[in-house]
Length: 167
Image (cartoon, rainbow, N blue to C red; front, side, top):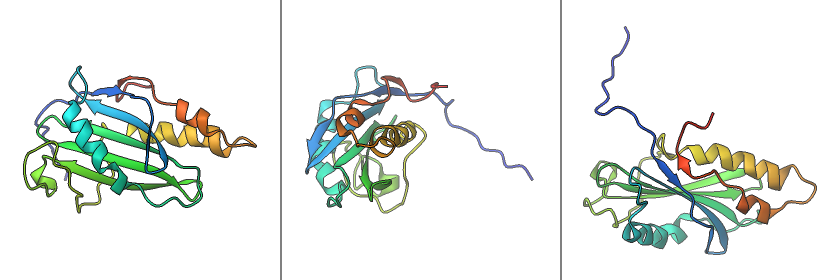
């Protein structure tokens, strides 16, 4: 029997912004912001998300201190910050926080009140595009060359535009 799923809204890609990298807890952190708002992520949400970032980053393990973060402003009250940190030279450590989304355990609808969710979700369709790019950039600049080039890795980001349509 074929299941039928009804979408509440038609799917649309979101906008992707790429602010410059920052340093947090000894890590160089590349940043991706995802939103449907052409003005970008509200500065108060960005400030709250980056305030929780230190608790999402693991203790360094000898791998070059690099990470990337996807900050996503949902279409409702939700805001999501996903932190991906390179570990064991070739693996990704993942941690996240969410705000304004009671379905994920948030105590309220405040998009600046970030908490750690208990559900093991890795990211939604709008948050996943940076992962493929970052995997390829890590291989290109850190694993394949004779000498790893962290600066080249940090400079290699997805272009701003949308979260999809990158064929």
